[in-house]
Length: 213
Image (cartoon, rainbow, N blue to C red; front, side, top):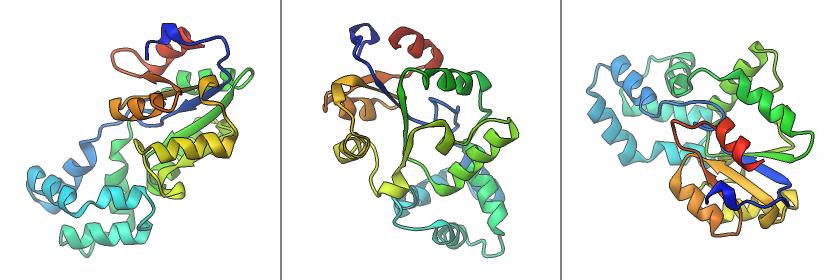
């Protein structure tokens, strides 16, 4: 929705993680796994899609060890250590802008803040590690509640995940803004009456917050 249509009754802010708080490169993990396995990137991408590894992992159907074992089996790389797989997987995460964290901390004074992300445990541990090296709160400390797809066993853009957040946190949709970079996620949230804000480059979350809050 257009941020100009938001109302003064805005009490709650829900943030996506990737490309909202932390910039990401979705192509990087496949590229790095392909390099490690000495395979064409297109072949690895096709296998990844065929076996639906990402969705299984991000919705909690498989755990860290099962994910890593899937990768080893798929790429015929039984000798890869856990750290090798985790490092390649985490290349999706780019540098975390400190000013975004500082702005979120400021917003806590007047708003209830939540995180809603389609993500995996390996990524969350990495983001929290980076935050700690920056002397910043972890995601769980930064937000009142965090909702990770792998924990709630649901994923955006399913309407059920938004309903889960509203119910669990006791939020009114009309008093809640949701910031996400994915158009399908925005449409699903807006369909429930949430004030959905599509974060699109070259603007960043800081620009949208200035417009909305």
